[in-house]
Length: 310
Length: 295
Image 1: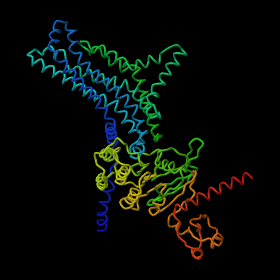
Image 2: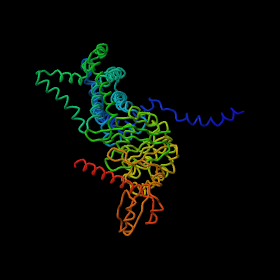
Image 3: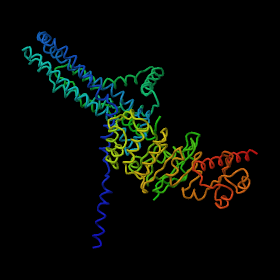
Image 4: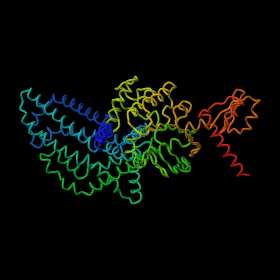
């Protein structure tokens, strides 16, 4: 009797105490990433705008497509392949270049803007750790932008192919040549491989370095990101008359072993043979780069703990 | 239960000492006013409590170390650091979405309810809102969080009197419920006097005065006398004296109310007057000490 009367009022109290459950870390990360997309709309607007421009340009050039194809039939299969596939590769290159630039400017702004407009004090008033905040920011160039680039490029290339097909069919021409040379499925796989290996993994230290500088610099984050590297190169040149550091940076920007393979393989008939994922995985440059990236991120997390507004 | 406890809390910026070994204890359910001149160390003390800055000494907020456990602490602590920290690019609806997404104790319906009483549109960006509206929005977000400690650092800075009054009224009527603790710093001491249960004066990184409001009201008395009674009043050893419109206002610590009433009008001093008296007395003592040392 007694225990029963005690048990009843406890129930609502207990459920009230349990109701504000802990929010899992993954959900905090998800909202932090969404927050980044709300703030930096250029992340998706810029590549979409470039894709729209490419389609517009392609539509205008498509007027000459039938005559171009007729002329191409006189060429060797290799040359035909290059000629027909060229606009598709060009579209991918333009969109990738755009998102690379977006990544760079995003990283330089990411940890700087929130200190400049003092909103860091608002973000820090919420139960989100500095680690989550920095990881959310790093995930934009490392995960979100490569995937976005992939999706936008593939859709753009499909629209290009369908447009060309419609035009050729409208003129009563055969589309077989076009479809044999434009193998979108293979191109998409190549693109995905390229984005993951080069843009996400190989470039990771570049993005993480920029994030670190944006969290550290009080102003002119871009100069702080570039000048120290330039200074190292100059000192090396003067002191030892060598340029290993500069060569290393160039190697990094060119995309390392896979970057070279990709640009060579892009135009060939059978691009897969050019790729060397095994060699890529064991290249010391990859692992050194990842270690540098992790160190930069760890430093950025630590730095954010100490920092308020500027 | 103790909400905030500090022992020998110290913080220096280079050669400047911002906090000079502060000891403080704030019990749960109090509304504490932390009052001090500019550069006294108020904001530094609050930043240490909120885990925004490293410090020396011991500090315990709701049983946690704020510097190492800021993110967990923020489930139970809310703060408004200043009126202008909400990100200007954000939309009102996005702030609600985000806080609801990351804060386990945020009640979105409650926040919507508070916002419904204002003219703030959901689709507006924060940069389009007036300063008063931004504060209303921030307050709506904060009040919808079931927190145990709320820290307000000059929350009404730059707002007009109507918004300031509204701010403290809604804080008291819709938020405070005796189980929560509120720590507030402000320069407009008069406006929050009736709100506070405790008051603490901080000067040059030290706590120079610490009292509950009841204690303060029973301990300190202010006497207004004409010139003819001045000598008699001075004989009772006031701690401070000022002249207003030909009358002298004397502040007494532990004086007999009857005795004072015989000389003139007696009333409870305002926190602002008490603050000025405490700070100027301290400055006088400090200068006489240095003068004595020089001699």
